[in-house]
Image 1 (cartoon, rainbow over the protein chains, first blue to last red):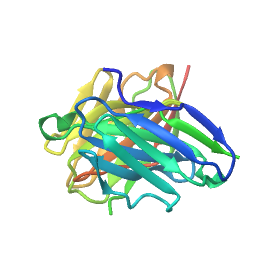
Image 2: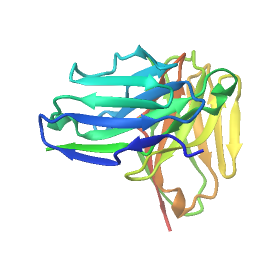
Image 3: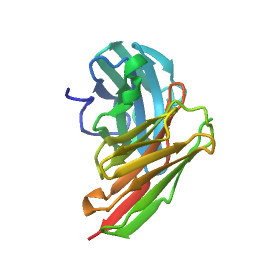
Length: 116
Length: 110
């Protein structure tokens, strides 16, 4: 199993540009989570999906942020327009539910976003 | 709302020492508790997961305990090595969400 795959690993963009982060969860995992990590606030949950359906997006900071999960193997987090304060590391994680739930969460390697 | 606190925020010890990292949480209605390790500039690596019905889990030199009633977990590292230097994060899982503490930055000095 290749684990949770995120792309790109690094993204540098100019303020005002659209940014799209991508995630491929572990096959068979039915929950997917987007987190943001900063020095000041640590790891914050932005949004999570169960069976491709968004369940809780209360952590999404502003309307500039949106997330989709069109199928079980792919999710995107989009920021439009981007601002310097969006600079952070964005992690995607996935988890199985039911009998496999006790294996816990698996995190991707993250996307380091820098908005200049 | 679940709040997770990790103490100390940073710890520096000489190689070979045994050490304990602490995690406390405010809502005892948890599903699992998961300890992670994060190296600088890297992602999170799962170390141990304790189910709410369990008291402890062990993996090699690591032992994690859970006391739901008091809202506490500890991660015990035996015979520490320089390679153990990293940030250790405690994640507390409720019905759906995994909430993290701010982490303990551990440095093992050769």
